[in-house]
Image (cartoon, rainbow, N blue to C red):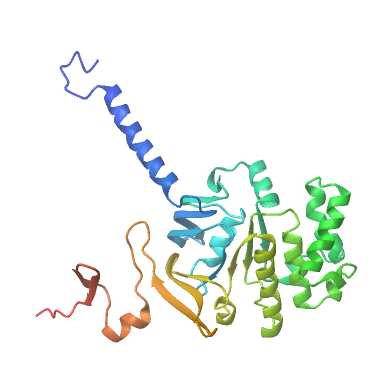
Length: 326
């Protein structure tokens, strides 16, 4: 029986649908506006795994923006969500919820064919394990040529680009060597050249120096800096090495599946020509208004489960809860 026949006062269906459509459009506009022209946009990104009947929340509403041309380091303790983030950005894994866009592509909405094209042309990826980055039965030059062969790049262009990349990264002497005849550092620099073969917009590196000694690690990190400076590729690198992370302008820390803090660095030269280096650490406010307070600041004040906030004209005061219950 119709609502009209029973005298029901329900709102007309057309009006209800219109209201829902407006809310949906508003939400879409909010998502589109977040991040502006950033090359990498993670908006309230969530990734949940099921492991032996246990739910593991690897990412818990992570927000991250990376602009085109940046060289950014990502740091965090083991299990913080760094590698999960990198796998999602590389197109190797998908988000459970939230939005992740790279170079204008919505990674959650890619078809299988589009995901293959994304991994082939938009991003390059470097693993920590040197053995995973190169085919052991090919030479350095052949490894760099391989991605371009799958992309139907002409033989002449392939040869020139392979030679240019190996020369730029200081491993031209490895062109005719198989990986087993290269050092660990040489393998990683050839791996960087291979990841750059199809001119990706983003280069992702997950602990690329984790198996290397400090001197070799610096040479590999220098190759990433060269790729960023000379080729203009945006580089996002996960590292546990504080020496390496201190060499980039921006370091983002992840804790408990969310971005927690960000360190920005810059240099200034005074009238005498002396250069000083400055680093400022900021706590990040995510899209939900959450801030993670650093543990080393919380513990001396015995801050545990709650704090008191006071609004001041130019700042917000955060005070430990000192009340004692009877």
